[in-house]
Amino acid sequence: MRQDFTRLNFGWLGYFLPSETTVGTQPDMLEFVTSKAASWDCPISLHANLKRFEEHPRTADNLEVIRRWEEVRATDWLTETDKEALKEGSREYHLLINEQGEYELVEYEHILTAAAGNRELRAFLFNRGGDWYLRYWHIEGDKKLQLPISPSRATLYKQLDKPEAFLSTSQTEVTVPLNDCRYIKVTDYTKEQIVDIMNHAIITN
Image (tube, rainbow, N blue to C red; front, top):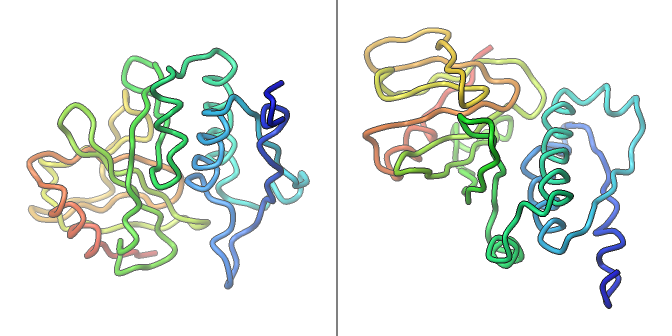
């Protein structure tokens, strides 16, 4: 146990459903806390019940975030450099599983203005290997997302080793599922252009 007792437990977290007044507990929120906890080699705890887990549409994604961070913490996968970076409160990180089935740590940014600031959409942007990726999901629903982007410059994934088909395409637009967490790899666009694309995204039923 560390001298400051932090290794005992990083904290108890509530588990909240989306409602008119809150987006509820979302994967990025748990990723932020569990990544900070892992940097101090601490577990986290959820205060909830089975009914609430069943009622939250993003429970599978939420628990997957915790599973990944607990696995890298338990196996001492993080380097000391990783841990020091994770401790910086202003930076957010995502622990992805890459095309080889291995963990990969990336820093990402929340696009608060996505879909004109519609709170239903959570969208984050990161760069790996010189390519830009979006990680996105709906806070609770099962809808569609129209993006003003050429289909030849975008690839949709739920898992990075398995590309998925778009729901529909035109020369200048793609429509993708908007429910569980997914990725979109974007090529031949700048960061600023991708943010602008997300700003003009449209959520449909």
